[in-house]
Length: 182
Image 1 (spheres, rainbow, N blue to C red):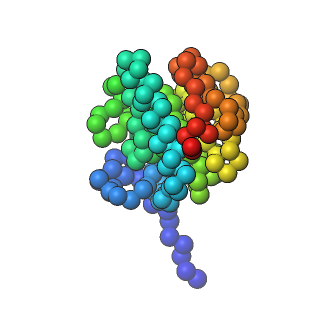
Image 2 (image 1 turned 90 degrees about the horizontal axis):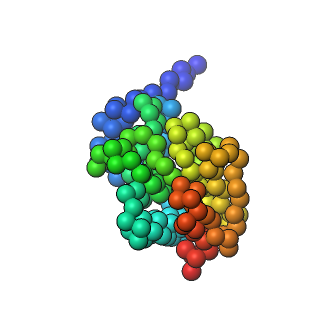
Image 3 (image 1 turned 120 degrees about the horizontal axis):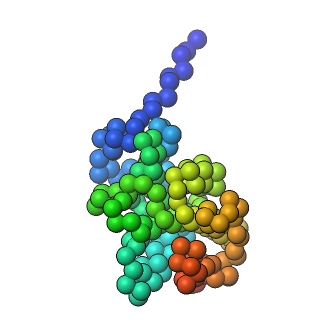
């Protein structure tokens, strides 16, 4: 009989020491290191487009929030370090030049091979950590689930053809995913 190896659990600090400036796309979830697959071209087009639209909006308004695109570490707590596809942070104290320490205000994840990660695992992590708004963009179904946790635990669902109002900006910004794929 062969012994099954015990899983290795790490703290965020141990994780950072093990993965300094790594090119590996990894996250720390509940103390376990998770290896992520490379994203598809469509995934990157959507994530890049969302990033560009948010950045242009913030600049046009002279806003203080910062938008960051993956890979960029977000330390949610002692045992969870994630790399959302796009994140918006409105509290500059959370950014230290290397990572975000605490919950971003808004996170956008584009589904690819890790569907259950974003739909189940990260949904709970982000809500518990205090993320205000969470978008899950699904290229397969051409729909976006929008959680605005300050208002409800249930998502609003938008097709790619429908402009999606951004809750953290009081709906002054809308993004239409179909426009990002043209």
